[in-house]
Image (cartoon, rainbow, N blue to C red; front, side, top):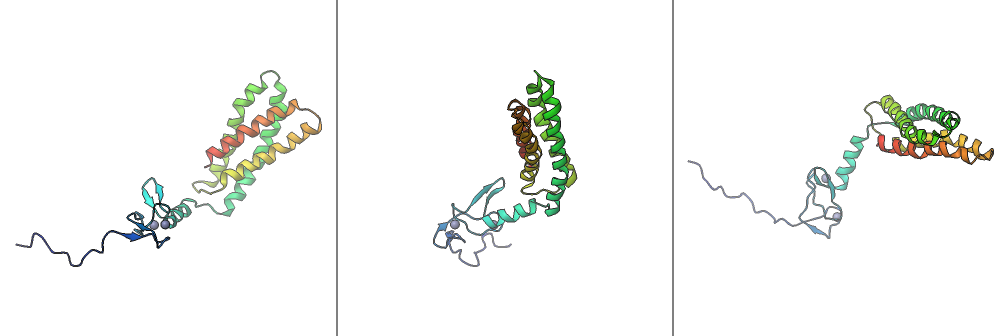
Length: 178
Ligand SMILES: [Zn+2]
Ligand SMILES: [Zn+2]
């Protein structure tokens, strides 16, 4: 028969460790990925438990698989679409008259969603940290000349419909391409 209670080969040095980033701070907490001791200030709570900042950054880098080319693709797709959307809002939807505000409230998030979806399809499964900001900037650039035309023409009323496109379009893009 084998021993039921094998003796520990060596004494455990206790559970107290020091944060690998703050050597003066005692902690009982460890990163659940690399097992390095971390203090409560450094520990980042994730869906899978507490992690050290190094592991979190590594995971993020793995998450964002897109390269610089994806930003170029995003601009090439989003800028012309934004110009078209801005032209449609400024000259067609705004021309409808009474219902143009209501229509633009509905159409603006749809237009933003369409632009976001077109970019998403083009970059496939790749993710980029600033993709939503880049696409939103394209919409701002696309709408800007039309706002300028209205401003220069002294048509304050004409700012409203493209303004709605800008506001809700940017909001939708930022949310969809996160
Ligand atoms: Zn770690
Ligand atoms: Zn620390």
